[in-house]
Length: 405
Image (cartoon, rainbow, N blue to C red):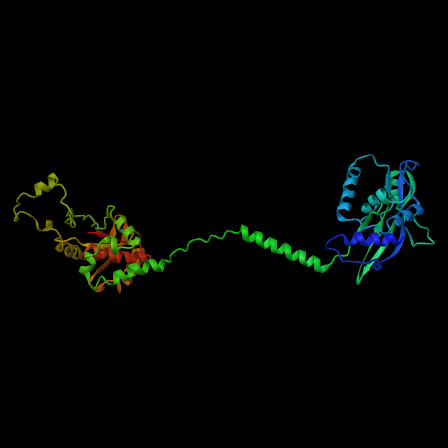
């Protein structure tokens, strides 16, 4: 029996995460009697070693080195085909008590059927005994002959930690139970696993950062500086090439201005008396109709009624007509309601402060067009100056464009 303690120590210390125990930590070696039921009264040729055989086997191991991990795994692999064989069962457990911490009754059943003793390995006078109570429900479920199998048991205490294991037939003895784990070793393994997980996560994590996007304020500062210098030197700004003076936003605005400009000329309401208002200033002369050609014939001023005399032109249109010798450039907003146009016009006026040399010299109003009301600021002496100022307004978030009247 002394050799059983050494084998338990060797089995326990074989695990790399278990505490290291000594022979003095193994105590209370005893016998456990387990009730079983089998289908027939015959034992079925089961080898029944006696106490003398066990003791002589232990004595044969005296002085031999302990079983290595490789030898233990090799022995388990050799027993694997027998464990996996699906032969008809003829023996069943008749107990349901969980008497050992860490082992279920089903695990104890498999261990006892594979490595249990048919005869007691020790007498009750020489070793402590424990008889497991029969479960009548399990015993009557299979309807066979009752019998007992015996396994050896031993306790292991290290400090405040304790456990109990079972030992069965075998050279060395087969042992099953719960080991006492070393917290330091477990901590080292957990730390290594955490480092490996962190390393894998770092390797798999994408390290290529996205290129920073320039802030809108940086893009807006360039046209603002260029436009601020335009009032001081209008001639220099006018002579500056568009590819140098304009920012990408201004270039996009200029590209959009190459499309046909919107018609922002006011439409006068038709009079009920049949008198037509004169047409607004046009860039090119339209084709004359037969009625207009007939109207060009000299007419007797005396025979023309006073009521047919046309009304004077709108003062704003008259001022535009007076500047017909040169192109008048205006900044206009998108069509919309009158309230939206007035709100946009207020923002355009505020945006002109500090950009235009004399904002008070510009005219600002909302004009009704076929598409809707538009906020309009005019006149600008050159298209280059209007585009520079328009670039600043666009950079500040206003949807404006420079058009020719």
